[in-house]
Length: 190
Image (cartoon, rainbow, N blue to C red):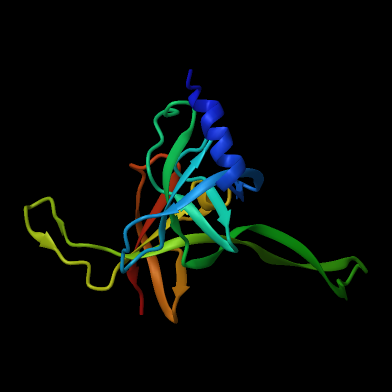
């Protein structure tokens, strides 16, 4: 009799590769998708639970799972992952740094310095959309930044400015329709 989980475990043992899913080591079968001129997409199959927004480290690259994973399929989990193409420093807080100076009462003087965390993301050009009045809105160089939804990326705020490929972009909105991902809508800033 066939046991799909045992059969897939045999495939994992034979053909699986070591990957990190949210920094946890596991085995997965990673296969190519049809060639896409814009993205390096791959399919991932594993016995471990995966969900949209998970970060997968595979062959020295970081990927985000971009497809919805509703449930296991015959004992395994399947998803589509896309390679990240930029690392964005996100302000996550501040720290007090001793300047080495003293105030008039002899107390140390501290300076407040922002702290940043580097987050991998997928940068994509926005496509045309239909506005509320039925007019077609052209993106005119606007971009989307797609991040894993985590504590660092939740600190991205409206009007934050990020530099991508030498150009500054300001966050003008968010698309929160894809659970597990944060998609920041950005426009070129001057």
